[in-house]
Image (tube, rainbow, N blue to C red):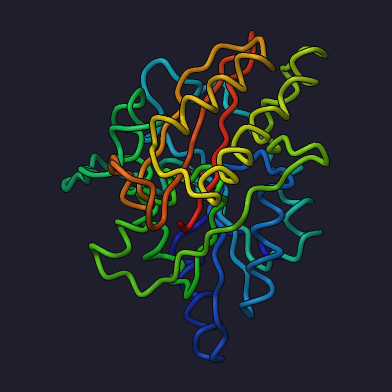
Length: 281
Ligand code: PAF
C-alpha cells in the first residue's frame, strides 16, 4: 500500500492506473477506522481493481461546538488496518493541501439536510459535499462506498452526484451490526452495562415497524407511535427523534409507499445512538 499526502502525486498514480484500464473504487473516511469502514473496503474489493481510501478530518464539516480538535487521529493504526484490508492507496492530505486558500466558490446543500441529524448540524453537509467534490476530482473513481448507518449522508451525496453529473456510482453498504443487532459504532463503548443491554431494542423496534408495514400498515404516525411505545418500555435513554421519510429525498410522506426510511436517534447518558432501516414498500 502506498501512502500519499500530495494531490499531484495522487493524480499521477490515478492517471497511471487508468492508463492500464484499471477500475477505481474509493472509500472516503476521516480515519479512526473500524469494522464499518473495513466492510466498505471489502465491498469495494469485490467490484474494482484498485482501492483508494482517503483519511482526512475535514474541518469544513465541523460546527463551532463540535469535536474537530479532539476527533481521534491515529494514522499509523489506520494505515495498518487499511493495508491489512487490501487498500492500494491511502490518500492522507493535510488541511493546507486540501484547502490551500479560502474558497472562491462555496457549496450549499438545499435539500435533504434540514431533517434527522442534519437539522441540528447547520452547514455540516455543505462541508461534506465540498470535500467530496474535491476528492472525487482527485481520485476519479468509478464507484464510491458509504455506509447506510449514515443514510442521510448517502442521500445528500446521491443528490450531489446527480446534480453535478459526476460519472460515479454511489454504493450503499449495509450497516455492520453486533450479533444482538446493535449497529456498530465507536460510541457504543460509552454505554453503561445496563444501557448496552438495552441498546439492541433500537434495531428491534425498527424491525418490528418493518414487519408492521409489510403486513399492510401504511400510516406513518401509527408506525412511529408503535416504535415509541416499544422503546419507552425497553430503554432508559431519551428518544431524540423517530422519523419516517421518503428515501433518498427525505420528504414527509402521508402514506407508506415506495422507498422509505425509518430513522431514530436516542440519547443515552454518554452516548447518542442512531439507527435506521430502509424499506421498499
Ligand atoms: O463519513 C465521513 O467520514 C465523512 O463525512 C466523509 C464522507 C469522509 C467526508 O469527510
